[in-house]
Image (tube, rainbow, N blue to C red; front, side, top):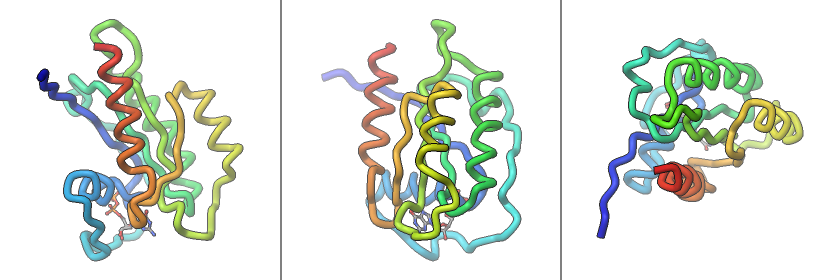
Length: 151
Ligand code: GDP
């Protein structure tokens, strides 16, 4: 048996569900009170090169009820691609996750997501609900599969 250690990143605006996603994937649980909601986190923060270093895959996440968090995905992807690449010079495989799909007030159209996904070099996009455990494992599987195929 061969073991692999892969560094997978997850980026996106505050409050979109990143910590919940990691917690769900690792422990299988969803805790509504995991972190208190703090307003005013819909913003892009440039990360350091060191954060990105050695990553083999990346998730860019937004909240379907928050259009600003979707628009900012552009900056998150750009920041990633500007600061790091695979050893073979290709961009880091990246998947776009439309989280909180369990909520009814979508502020972003599926066709806009599709268009953005294609135009910005994502592998694919998926709607996820960390709350309902929808597509969490599937998204990670897709990303890991891609990362391993590039090894
Ligand atoms: P982060 O700042 O991106 O790490 O976001 P958090 O993981 O702290 O989540 C922010 C808030 O969104 C929390 O109150 C979570 O309970 C909630 N949340 C996360 N994922 C979902 C989801 O799929 N559906 C719903 N309805 N709420 C979610």
